[in-house]
Length: 268
Image (cartoon, rainbow, N blue to C red; front, side, top):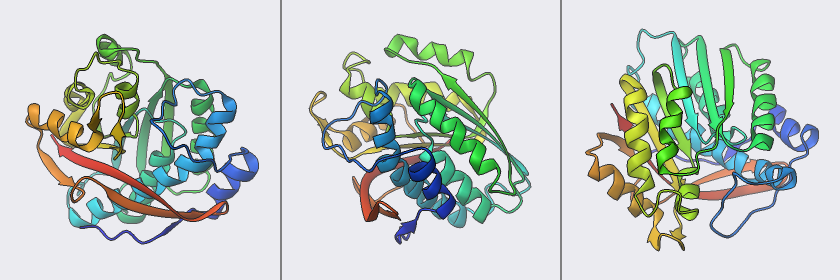
C-alpha cells in the first residue's frame, strides 16, 4: 500500500493558519459536528484538523498519481469539487500533490461547498494565499449551502451545473450520520449516488471519513461506508487496507500528530 512518512506542513501554510489566521491546536474526542461551529471552534478546527486533512489528501493522491501515472495523460486542466470543504485542508493537500506529480496540469478549477460561513471565509483566504505560492493557475469558488436532510440533496443541482474530474469528501459524511439527517438511511450510499453522476467519464470520487464507532448509528463508520458503496455497486479503484489508515503531520504546534481514517476511491 502507499508509503506514509510524516508530512511537514509547508512553512507558508503553517505561518498563515497559526500566525495570521489565529488557529489553535485543540483536538476533540467525540462524534464531531462542525457545520454549526462558531468562530472560536472553527479556529480550533483549523489548527487541528486542517493539517491532518492536508497530510491525508497529499498522501492518498500522491499514491494514486504515482500508481496510475497515465490516468490524466494528455490533460492540462482539472475540475475538482469538494463536498463539505470546511477550511480546505484536503484541497490544499490535493493541489500540492497535483503540483508535484502531474506536471502537465496547468490549470485547476476548484468548487468547494460547506454550510459553515466561518469555515468558508477561512477557506477563501487560504485558497487566495495558495494562488500566490504555486505555478498552477487555480480558480476557486466556495458555496455556502447547508443540507439539512436526505431530501435536500437535490439542492446540489444548483451548484453542480458542470461535471468534474475529481470529487472529494473528507470527514463530512459522518456529520450527517451523527445528526441523523438521513433518517437512518445510509448516508454514504445516498451521497455517492448523488455525486457519481457529476463525474466526467473516468472521473474519480474519493470518500474519506473517520474510523470511529458512531454512537448515533451504533455502527463503525468504515463498515457503514463499505455497506453503502456495495449496495450501489461502486467500482472501487483503490482503498486503504482494512478499516483504518494512519497519517502523520508535523507543524509548529504539534510534532507527529496522527490521524486515522478510512478511504475509498471510486472510478466512474
